[in-house]
Length: 189
Ligand code: IMP
Image (cartoon, rainbow, N blue to C red):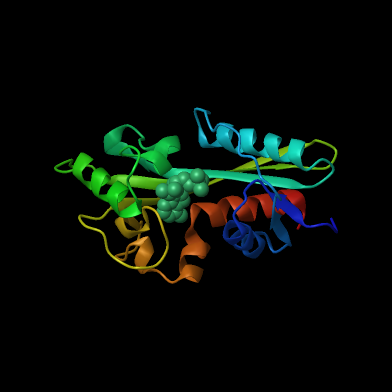
């Protein structure tokens, strides 16, 4: 593979993160036109985005991801709705607060981040991998690193939340890191 992988996103920051995780050049898709993410699973949504990416970038290697937080006490929610949890108008801190309110008093605070990746090769072959980061929900947000629900997920075996880990510490154990390592192997990178 000599050309850069195209990530099904318009976000250069996300492409830079995947370049680090995959150990290969990754660029966002110019003029990315996002499809409706209406799949029932992270894998469905990653596949929807990868196929849209392949249509928008014919002949390229395309990778798409989808990820989120699954909380056992909420039957796996927010899951594929993680980015929209709590309704429109909330920022990351608002979504974190809405989630803490929803699980208040629940005896089981187990939760996990999950990530699905789908790659499509120039000849149309599809490869899919998944990764999870198991943990438990903190009682209150802690830490300033990361994004999204990082301030409330404490990885199994840790006392710190993901937002209290250094970026390289999170990469080493994260759902995205695990899925990316599997994809790297599958693509022979
Ligand atoms: P997307 O896969 O980029 O659409 O992310 C979905 C949503 O899941 C994000 O907006 C975050 O709220 C949440 N999420 C996914 N991965 C992480 C993570 O590593 N840390 C914190 N939140 C995450």
